[in-house]
Image (tube, rainbow, N blue to C red; front, side, top):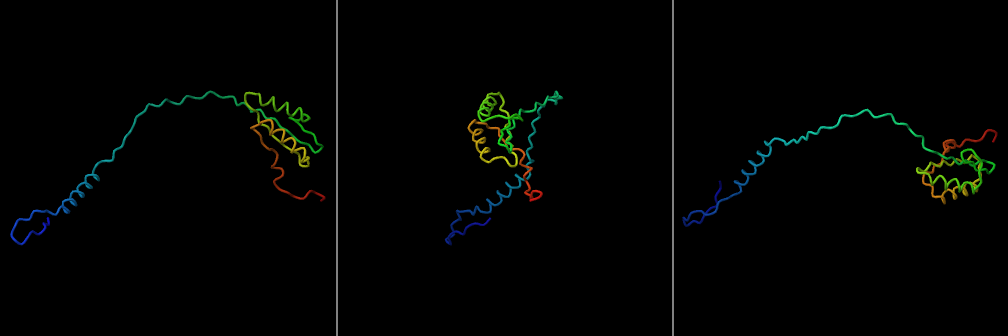
Length: 147
């Protein structure tokens, strides 16, 4: 180990250089850390064995369909209704324990004004399960035959 030089008067050296000592200690510490085995913890739990599930009957959710025709009729599940009946039917469907899905399908040339009025009635009723259906028919816009 290196020692600091003392005075030239012959007095003994009083300070020791500790840098090499610290270097050796760090090397030994790293070697001990490397040689420690990796701690692997395993928790043994007795899990229950899977039981065959009984066959469940799949209940088809209730769906109501509102169709707007080209001759300005509103159909509820195929039956013609007026705006007052639509409000009543929507209120009755909201009282059910599980809200039925309401599907809205205007025909290709249905009146935009009628569509807007019916959508406002539906929005005002507070229906949360609402969807547009039948839009896939209008995915491509080709010319009509004879046009």
